[in-house]
Length: 139
Image (tube, rainbow, N blue to C red):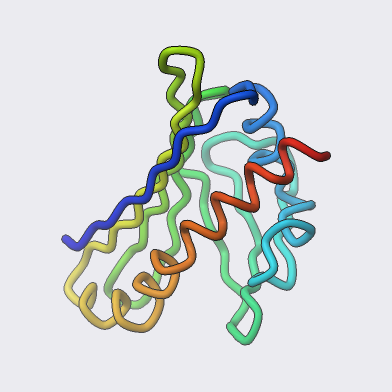
């Protein structure tokens, strides 16, 4: 298994406000400039599917594998012979919120999908987190 994480700590924002931005899937394209669209039919609950299209990439289906309201969620993208897990956490600590995202890839062809997809996702985590924070502050 291959895994990489990015974390940032922010003050002046609540977990609730960050969670609201994260779970408003149909608006992700307004603050994530590397995607064409993301849509969620139904509630932000485990088992539901996010339809996702990165710019220049194919349409994907991300399953919400685990959702802990106001705390964490994990979405899973299934590739041939591998799965990519995208874990998002909000951790309150000493008047601040730590935002942590971990990307991991598992399966017999994980090395292929790591190179084709996961490393690019990881390389964009800092900017994605900064945009999340900006959206939460100004929306």
